[in-house]
Length: 260
Image 1 (spheres, rainbow, N blue to C red):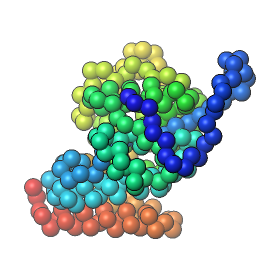
Image 2 (image 1 turned 45 degrees about the vertical axis):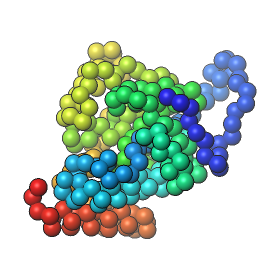
Image 3 (image 1 turned 90 degrees about the vertical axis):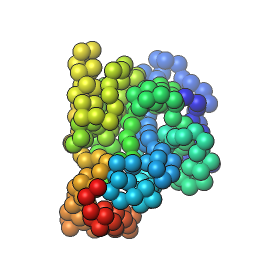
Image 4 (image 1 turned 30 degrees about the horizontal axis):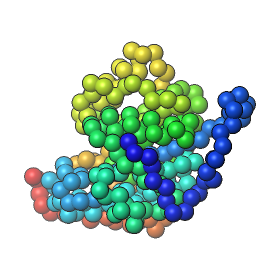
């Protein structure tokens, strides 16, 4: 993976000298980095299963809303934040639109496991704790990211299970463990196989609350209900209201199209 591309406005100072190892141990410095894996929003290239119900253009527009909602909602999470983007030729398009407090990191070639492994290796050059999320869980609260980093002080790996058998979040401390091999990605066995890798290597881990990834129309309805319930108990931001409105519009399109 190529090095990350810094935004024009930096939110953290650049360290130009490295303290001696003993000094670092005494300081017990912890730097948290959050990586959001995202594809460029091109109709037919994103949310393809959802597109079967609502159409490629609507699915693409909703995916873009998910990405920017998470960028805004998580803009103060972690010490460092990166959009880990694909395809590599979309760099300039991302750069023109993303907030300045997120840097850009191109995804490496290979399957999802290889791409996450490469990003962890890159991120650990500047961070001590690294968390990866995708853009399929737009209702992910910032508090869950905070909890993930806190749990990494207790165990070297943290996972956020999703209802489809995968995970919406994975975090590691200090190093990238070899846990991504022999996994059939986008299947219901992803979380189970990952935990098997961890237990086989005697790697301690923690689990976050289970959440719903949006892959199909039924998932979108689950997220809509969860967001609506949240809005009943706490005043939503303008961005939250826009997200809920866009989700409801997509559901209406899917229901008007009927069974696929």
